[in-house]
Length: 593
Image (cartoon, rainbow, N blue to C red; front, side, top):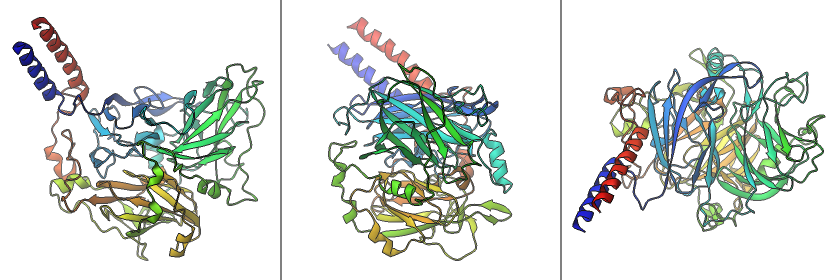
């Protein structure tokens, strides 16, 4: 018995030494290896360079469950720096892993880096993508699904299957050419099309769609109900999603269950994700169209900016034919889209990641501690270059990421002086960050004085979409807020010449990004960060920097070279070595037992 005890102790000591972050009693881990590289594809019938994950375009999905620990080992096979970001994933106290340049040094070409984070108390539909250098315009994106734990029921019958739809506007030029266009002060122009799951449109019209384009076909069985998880991974064009002759029952958006309601079509804006239940209740005389078409544009000029996939019943008698289902007609109802957005409400009786009802958080009864009015405007020229602004400031990412600068006493990396209101002053570039108060309950109003539809995202948080309306926001607009069942999400649309008000409970310490999800506006500086520190613990509430933290900027000399993909230890290599060592130890135990 003594020898067994000694051997077991040795086993545990070695296991702990190899895997200090793993414990037998802790929450489970899921592991992924992502190799990010260029491949050649022809989604619109023209060969072009796209960004693939593990040779796939779009990338594979991450499948995790509430409270799982997620480890993603990312290998950068591009010819430029890389970061992957996980919008909507609320990394508690851990902005070190969010994959944005204000928080993380980039992964250089031919290097690898492992993201490790916990999906704490979350469920729902999200997606990941590369956050640097306009790279999302060339791909690199994929779905991220967070499942309920088995003990937590979903508020609808279990669907017969999950169907992922990644939709987005697309150009046949790659991201480098597109960003060069923006740098030159030019508009990107009309997109060349809309992709569905990385594929071009079904040839519903031989004039608009060239022959030979590969399209997405979704196989289904009659009478069954499927969950369609639809993600807008595009660049800047709002899309209307619809399935010919089928209703869309909205059930979830970005991690929160909604009041269930049927729609014939639904507007989805850049960066947003929705789940719909769709029942296969039609006859199978033919296949049916799945459509994602451009919104709020000149219909005839933008007609080609339409994605078309096929819903294929297993007993279908023929291909889809005829015209596409009609897009929304706003001619006589200008409020249609905004009213649809306002109708998305939280299911306050449904459980989310935890057994207690989400409606127990009565956000409408909490006193607002601070109001921030963030105004976007048409592009301006600053120092000879086109720039996008919030409150007249066009953000420039610091050379040394914000929290890394704090940890290492790097002075002057950024300014903690972002204004809470727009001022009549000359637009300028700056590294200005918003000084937010820990445990505050803030109101953020996005005022869109630009001429384009915009989406805004907040990293690290879900927020309540309290209200939206036309014109300029003023304090009397609070009387129109939804203070009971406003949807909680991480990305919201703001209509041109309109405002959207959100409410956020600042309970997650760290440095968190607020940005335009429209890639062109984001690339040109329409973002800032919230710095949130627990003053009682002097920042110690936040997780420490990871052991594999990358250094850059003023701290570049601290970076070692052991993360190059051609040599040196990696997370995956350590894991495989650990498996071999553990097998040897188990054999040793069995022999001596």
